[in-house]
Image (cartoon, rainbow, N blue to C red; front, top):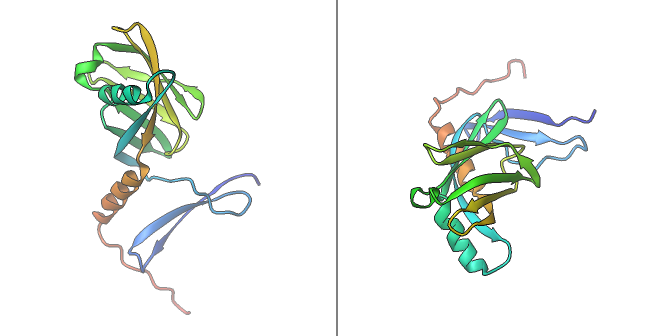
Amino acid sequence: INSTIDASMYVPMMGKEVRFLLAPNGELSTEKVLKDGSYPAPNDVKYIGDGNAETGNTMARKVLADTSVIKVKDGKINTTLTFNEEMYNMIGNFKVKVDGENAQITENRTERTISFDMPKVDSKIEVSLMVTIMGREVSFATILNTTKVEYEQERQEQKQPFRKQETMKGV
């Protein structure tokens, strides 16, 4: 069998359900797993290309809002990046690579967003766009802060009603 086992269990000492993945080789997977929901994800940017990296990082930060949104539904992950209003009319022709592969994006010009699917929460994201006033394409990595996302998931779980511990009879 070459499948990953997705397991979850209620841990009374922790007062919550814990989820983990077991890889085919018997090792626990380090992949981060999120339950269905919508999670704000702070992001960092890192300029990719020739030229002054500090200037590139500053410009990328001015273009991209500092919080993205990760939505999980039925185990599928969709990420939405929002672009800052003052820069949005000067950029276009968005392209995204996820883990080195071209991603299909959905652009919402009204909301100034692009959305795309990812295979895992900590996938590598590279955004390329045309800066129209410069007539030049620029690229930058977008790094999602998944530690904050996991914290948000735990916070949402704590809002769930307390689950009574079940006892095993005859033991």
